[in-house]
Length: 102
Image (cartoon, rainbow, N blue to C red; front, side, top):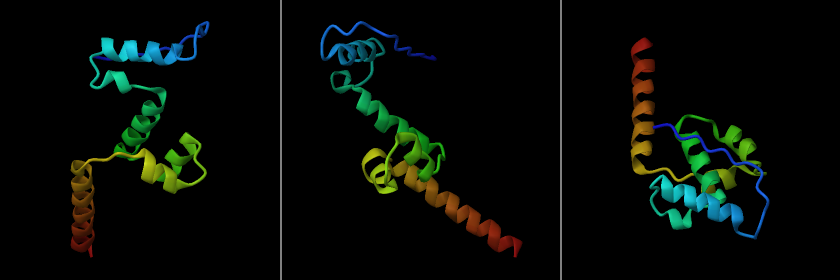
């Protein structure tokens, strides 16, 4: 299922108007932990998915507007062990290819 989320210009009626709208959308989509859903969480998710899909760290840093790549790497990426294992397998596979070609 493809979900497209468009945020239109709403007349802001209160401080948490957009936050409440996003939580409502998250609840409708049956997202886990929808009560803690926020725009800032979307930034973290965007960064993590970008890194998982091979976006280079300096590129992600610029996309997020961080002054230092260390902020992006340490605070914004939330990779699990399955991605670390995949990365290690890729390194090993590339080393074997290089060795067999020499």
